[in-house]
Amino acid sequence: MMGNIFTQKIPFKDVYIHGLVRDENNKKMSKSSGNGIDPLLLIEKYGSDALRFALIREVAGAGQDIRLDFDRKKQTSTTVEASRNFANKLWNATKFALMNITKNVNREKIEFDLNKLELSDQWILSRLNKTKNNVTDLINNYKLGEAAKLIYEFTWNDFCDWYVEFLKPRFNREESSSHSNDENLLIHILNDIFVMLNPFMPHITEELWHALNNHSQNKLLSLQNWPSNSNDFINNELEKSFEEFFEIIRLIRNLRAEIGIKPSQFISIYLISNNTKLLNFLTMLVQDIKIFTKSETVYILQENEINKKDYAKSFSGIVGDLEVYLPFEGVINLDFLKDRLTRDLTKVNIEIEVLNKRISNKNFVDKAPKDVVDECKLKLIEANSQYKSIIQKLKMLD
Image 1 (cartoon, rainbow, N blue to C red):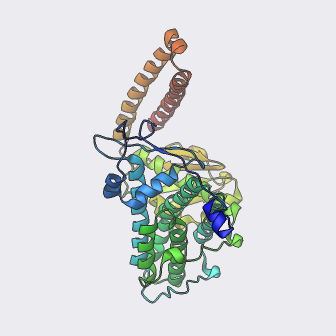
Image 2: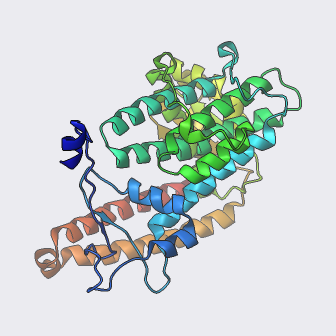
Image 3: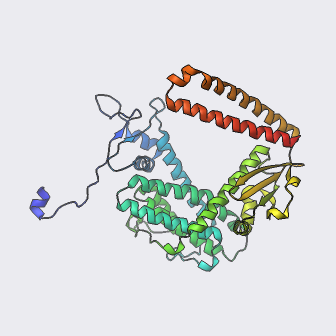
């Protein structure tokens, strides 16, 4: 009111009202209760950026209270530790860039050739620009927690877990005409991440931005323009194709683990479908499939090109329109695998027996909370499904 009287101007057009930070039991912190959490202790253990990001990320909506988990005996917080791990992930991604970017790259003007973009480049640019659009809208509407989550998901999942893996074999090639394009695109993506993340984690982003771009200490990341958006890069259809691609990679990795194939052991994979569009897409990424799944040979075929009886000695799975086969004959120790599956079957049988007894107990069903009973029923369904799966695999091994 005083500001309005003296200046005849309203001092603030918008006021952000935030909630309380509550203790691990969701109680309000107070001196009389003695349940306060010392922020300096958490900052010393995890860093101020980690604490700041953890608190913002926990905000579900404007004015909502935050429950900060805290182990008083160990004086640790898994929530803040997760944000510290995120900072480490970003640090390692920047270190990867610095190890692979040549010194003669022009850091003042980062440009990349659209004609040299590979499919994975087009995908990450689509994800990046969609993320920038959404984060901008969320911040403009003061949805800070949602914005922090979105940046986290893009940086950790899309960029670090997948795109960096696409880049590694490219940088490992001694000679490539696309190296400079890959370097520029990598710098471009990291710079956009740094700018978006700077309001949430100002210290580490400022440090990494200077290291990546060789800027003087007089130039500050916090004063840079917000990254511009380009809807021309957004390709929803391509993003859906890559989502399916990632599901296929996860399935193959899971099948390898089930069979017990060593990480260093290369195998053959058969990808079979009548979806011509999907098969063409996978054909363009066949080298990436080999690298991601440690495969010596990848066969991409239509159903009419094979006889499924020939793949009786294979572990298999389905993703959408695609069937995946991993032949195991001559690849693994069958006796060892049979023994392991037999032990797993024994464990599942015991679990099914215990769950059946609980569900058939009328006192348990009537008196236990509904969510506990529902969880028990769900576990029984999963155990029965696992039982059928193991039986089917043991039959294949006979």
